[in-house]
Amino acid sequence: MKLSRTARNNLTGWAMVAPATIIFGMFTFFAMGYALFISLHSWNMLRPMVWVGLDNYKRAFSSPEFWNSLKVTVLYSVYTIIPSVTISLLIALLLNKALVGVGFYRVAVYLPVITSMAAAAVVWRYIYDPDLGLANYLLGLVGVSPIRWLNDPKTSLPAVAIVGVWKRLGYNAVLYLSGLQGIPGYYYEAAELDGASEWQKTWGITLPLLSPTTFFVVIMQVIASFKVFVSVNIMTNGGPVRSTDVIAHHLFEHSFRYFRMGYGSAIAYILFMIIFLLTLAQFK
Picture 1 (cartoon, rainbow, N blue to C red):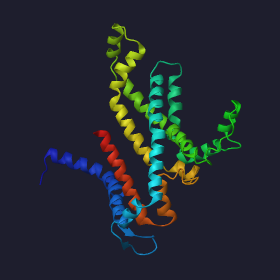
Picture 2: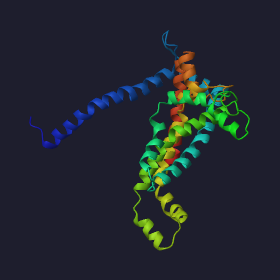
Picture 3: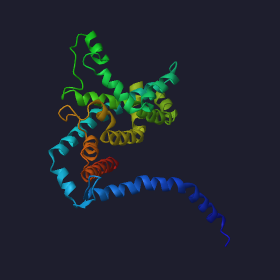
Picture 4: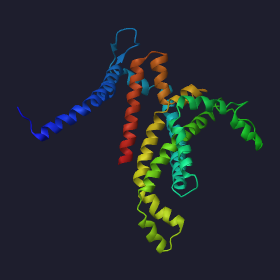
């Protein structure tokens, strides 16, 4: 049977996307479905699964440790989202100007993004060292007493949040820079003819036209903040006194340290629903 040209094109297109679709389906949709299946069972990976229904979810919602991890995650998000969005916007505004060596600055700002978080966390752990760290050395130059950054429950979460902000600045700044370069120049020319100042142009033209970019940046920052794990696991391991026990670390601890895979999968799905609802609320 001879196929039409449209049918042949469709088959060619499906054949080209089939490998990626199969891999994505296996490692995403199948994994999500299997995680939901595991969350309804008690399983330590050594013995057969035992059906428990919604007991893992009930256990999570009745656990003070789970609610503490959720509170810590929300605090971490508050510490990172507003500074990251604000500072990255200011950096993008500077990088959008015709500065000498602006290409170098753009590369330098983006370097933390491509740096391994595991390696960066190890370096920042040494920076925060209470005795030999660079952070306390710089504070000592202005007469500030040494701070036990990662060993004090009051400063451990803000210290980890600083690393999160540093890691995401370049990514957010590049998004804002692309948004800035997409704004037509005639808006600013018309504003200059009307005698608008730089602040008036920024407030009346730049920020409103950047609102779609800001929306995307905030969504991505919220998702990244709620999924934070590597920096916490390496720098503090959830301590001290569970002050940095974010929900992803709580999930990891129960799944791979205590081998409670059913309970860990239930927490993973709760985290998924939280991120989904927050994203949906931002769309609304």
